[in-house]
Length: 351
Length: 287
Image 1 (cartoon, chains in turn cyan, red):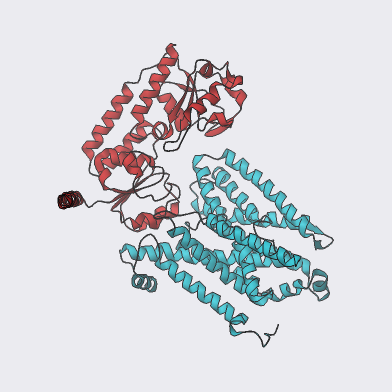
Image 2 (cartoon, helix red, strand yellow; image 1 turned 45 degrees about the vertical axis):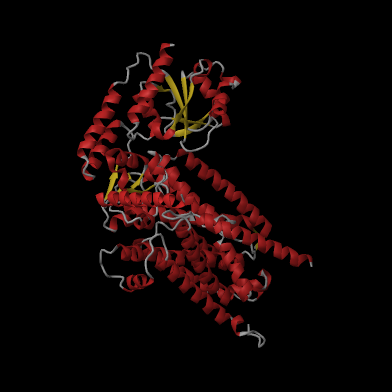
């Protein structure tokens, strides 16, 4: 795709991408500077530049050990959700393919609650490391399993029927809802309260230990997904056309589902269900950049990161001394925007 | 007239400021309490004036509910707690998430975590530990002996009344009953009764028929304090249910609402709450 000569400078994809990246950096800094405790910006900068300094000043601890890991986790999780949404929308050739709608999140949730409730019976409490691993692996497996199942069931003679897939996704969500219901029934009070807050989404589990294993996985995953940007562009032409151009659509789809469902499952395990970031941000980027995945994928990742950093900032500062659940906030903003997109598309179609 | 009024107000203001200054000079301790039982004990140990923040489950005493909130005990915000610049943090063992607790501990602020009490013994231990940490050992001893004497005056009942404890309004059709291992069961036994629901642990929904089969003498309905309730309607929902007219508790009109926080927190009011229930049980058995 050649930039047409009539495009203004701020319509150039590279410039748009740069602006989003700049916005992300700005959002990260503002988020580091704001919170329940008012800390002067100079102290914030100082604390961020001296990551290794071990002073007892509480301001330094808040910036370095509470806010910084949280912001970085928001970046990683937001980028994963958004790029997963963009990829799923491309491989299912469906603008509604959100990790939530096709069952990735529900599968992840089922994995997480099963582990929260039944894991304590299976694994002795004296092995905390196994619990740490389990609480991450179960949701990943759940997310991948449910998504592969939805994909298998929706596949008919090598093609995916979009309506069928959404309906199967709906049925899987209901089935997983029942599974969660069983787990809730057998849970004790503490587990139930944990599940409630976990399902509303939060970044409160973020710390440097979590980041040390999360960051490499997510970076690898995103760079792996970015490598498929040209294949995804071929898929834009249509499945038959892509096959005739020499693309192994089956293989591409299966591989990408594995990557995205695993990544989203991992974020669900860590932060609970954070809806609409994966659905909305790719649309937002498409409005600005068009459908070319060479730009769309990195832009979605950056935009998703920015969205989640801002959402988490709002979750932290909107109620003094306590936190709003993050998933509630993203749904409050995301759902009306989704409606707007639908109404807009409808109006265009009728004219 | 105007001048004298102004003078009066300014005098009051100065007096107020001086009192406030005197109060703040008295102690520079700033305590954040997380968990209903922790808050109750700290207030009962005369350190209520030093408490600068509580969590949502701290509904007693009244003064605590007017303090800044740091969220619910299972989902507190580490920065929110630290932003109150506490010199001491007291929590019950269900404080969480674990990450927030670790971050708070890492900040170096002294943090005490008492077991979330489920029996008088747990409570005595928590009172003693906090008495030492808050330098109120004498008040702790007094508080403990007060509760002990209250519990000692509970009458032993020859025939234990059969009790069912509902967590929510049964008039709504959803019978969320307390089973094995719950604080409700512990409280019923402490007050000399017997929870007839032994089929399940925790709080679970039971069928309308089960209530007929179990034939309880007393039905207790726990209501959360600070929420609006229409008590008459809640009680009528049970008393006028045609299916339950043969259940002794319904026939003898032994259906009562109890405040949840006071009855189930096993906090400093455990003695009062148990005595009150014991009285109710004794009357029912003697009838």
